[in-house]
Image (cartoon, rainbow, N blue to C red; front, side, top):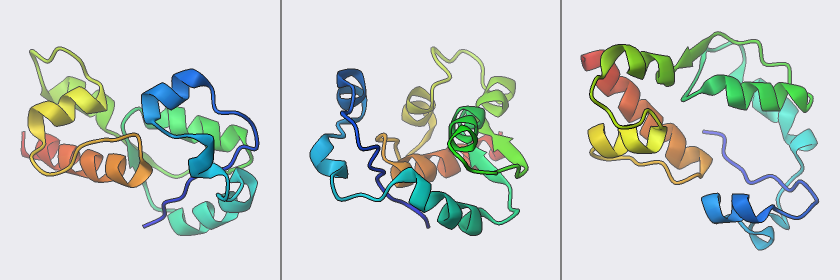
Length: 125
């Protein structure tokens, strides 16, 4: 696994604090994004990268110096293809509806584990 907070060396907007519960204290001793990109690229190698609305994350990382051109597996469009009568296709709602073990928390590792469980459900459907 690869999981770390990132210190952006600026104040965290109140909306982000409210959404994620991440504070300046959480990231004050965290590494910078710039220092972690080579480690992330090495971790990912050329393997597919899976996520929910994964372009959002990959575009952010690539705009900040990453070069992740890996194949992508996005559970958002897969969810649209497989599930009907869902009030929302957010990762949170889908996991509340279908997951039994892992749920997103706006922490990378929790969100990844929840997304893996969701993906397995999608595959079964």
